[in-house]
Length: 322
Ligand code: SF4
Ligand code: SF4
Image (cartoon, rainbow, N blue to C red; front, top):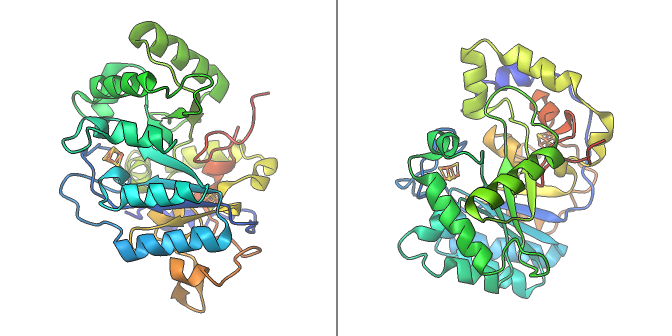
């Protein structure tokens, strides 16, 4: 879905060049046990796209060759890829930090009964979407019963040590606003989440990442349909901070799709803007012998979503609150 691309590509954005590659964000496929209304890849139980074993091997080869520090796996539900555990285990054996973008409800799916224990044994960092601490808001966005299932999963992870000081098992939650506004300051919202989830549900976690909504995909299409695209872009542009340009995630990250093609970031993957060389789309195998430091990033109007206000990345805001 590229409805907003014709508008975004006309909006100038400051040049960004790549630094050292230290993170691979890998989409393992679109199969998911949920089918959320806002899902940016239209994931669901019926999707069959999945990264194959040969491409997984290329990911591992690139990790070794480039001494990648962090592997960030996403989907769909990445855990449903049949090679998920092999990839995670091999990356951990190589000393790589592994982050699993986990939807929490996957822990209750048939065949995944031991997933929580596997993640804990491999010391995988869990990053879980939790768009609100209220049941009604979560169920409206992610499906009936998702909130309760998520709380059960969080309690189970807590029992294994996740989210608890000193355990070394990191559990982070992700929030993004429901509508066309910037997220509130990360530290303030994190304090609210911690208090309410602990008092009401006995759940603890490490950090809350707040992300701005990108004016792309289904959210972008809704902005256009409601006549709010220009106003939201105005909000992002007027909150732009040049100093966020130094830390946008595309400086050090490559996003890989399920077929192995590479992008400057996950948002560019959603906009179908692959990294290109000599007129061809770059594949992960092309990176094995390439040095991409210094390459220009494919920027456009959507990039203001990364540099507005506190800034936004897969690891939450780029700046501490003033
Ligand atoms: S859990 Fe995530 S990947 Fe699955 S349908 Fe929902 S938003 Fe999409
Ligand atoms: S949207 Fe992607 S390319 Fe643009 S600034 Fe953000 S991370 Fe970089």
